[in-house]
Image (cartoon, rainbow, N blue to C red; front, top):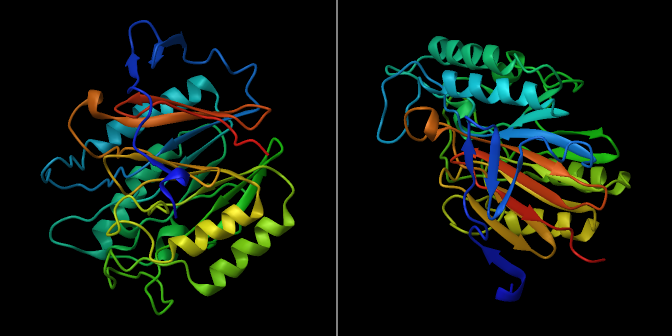
Length: 308
């Protein structure tokens, strides 16, 4: 892949959320946080890696604070009346000592706050979501609005756009991550999910956005999906995918590869206090152009649709 087709890193300055005035500064433009609502085709919220656990901080990760950070995020999303909200994985973490029971309690606690959103909400499975519990247990204790219960990967439509949620939490042999029985670097989209993805893309005629936890863009080979090239090829060949939103890489990232934008949101769990929160509102206009408005540490990004 030539460098002409891959661009990494943030190409806009970080936006600062000015709570007192209710405005957002993205690069050099100053506007009300909801000023584009009337012109946007669709607006949705994203957050990632809250890693909630009832346990002491470790390094830069302040696990307990994710409840308050999530509450702030959900309040803003309700105020802004976004169409739906997506969490991009590593929703919960585990306590010390590790136990299935406490991990389930962590999940229920953070889901109760996420559930305050007054609209459709969706989950993307992350590797830590299968620490101490199974994917089935995670899905039984969370809600994906309008999705068949137990679905690990799925798609939905909203306002003429198509959305795909992928699950890369499979070992190389195709088995699920389960109760911590995996290595976090052994991350794969298995054959059956690849077949489903290609079929799902073939069946839609709508502009498409995908959500996934582990990154598909090769910024750091220890952190992205082993068959990422194969997945990206399927997305590219469809000629329908506008962008992919990702988590896992806590410092965040941005890439533009073969006409598709890859935006990795910064992790909610990193740092202490409200100033170290991270979440964003994504606006898609009628031309397929995308604007990400980041709050606190999250980065603003303008992502225009590639010419046909």
